[in-house]
Image 1 (cartoon, rainbow, N blue to C red):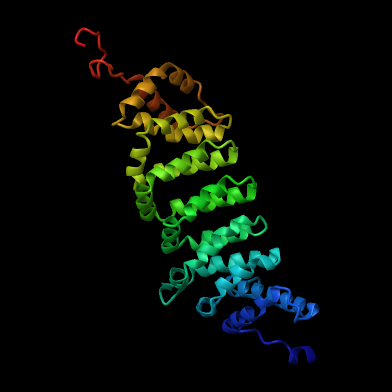
Image 2 (tube, rainbow, N blue to C red; image 1 turned 135 degrees about the horizontal axis):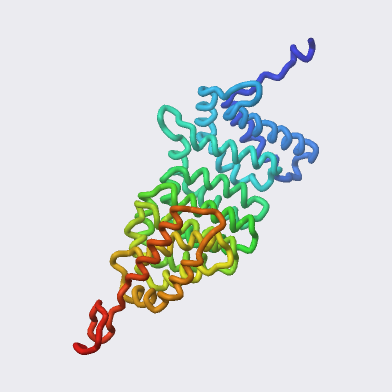
Length: 352
């Protein structure tokens, strides 16, 4: 009976946010605060972070309530809690970090009165992205910061800001990182950045084509198998997207690019070979192939046709076989240009 009388009243969403704000400072050691008290406060903070997650997702006892979610969303961004969580994230235990990434993911999707509060907040606080991206430098927190960043990129204003910043150069560096977790997660975020908001990405790639693909080809030629695999898979996704048609035509008009793809066709990994084929097939299919590409394809015609005739996979795939047949037909029908008379037909030399 006594326990029922003095049972703690659940905090409202607004109170929950305010309490979390007050408790976050206790995650840092403080000589003015007794350590046992600080640890008690940190435990309370962990509990309230988990309670915030329950408000948004529900649990086995209850479903999330729309009004509570809306109030929590408004108060969370009004009180600048995202900034504080980014700052104090390294001080929290792995369980609370995971809860935080789930909370932030949910809040990105919450609409209040028809508006994405998170998008409006991030547009006004783009400096938070400058804090999130360097989170990849710490292996212990890289995955948590990466998860938060990917959820923020769902908003076009965030993607546009990152694309137009120097952070793009940093993403290339992270994908070369020897730490598997960092390079893989950075590649995942990079993919989200370059595939979600199609019109923004198309404009960016057209404007920054030269330096971007110069850096990108270095990923394709990386000595690291995972880096090459991630890069060739994303390249196919970008070039085969209709919104990037102009970029695709430009890419497949480069002999240097084709040589890289031809090397990837010989990769020891079957997945990389297959993904490379899906990009390589665009070169012979290009109806306006530059003459240097035609000449290389003709010079290597026998080798290429022999390679593709043996190019098979364990699992039958009708579309792959059809695409391969088309590529072989395109290569077989190519006619070299006479270097002397500039004729596209076979030249017997009499008119040169």
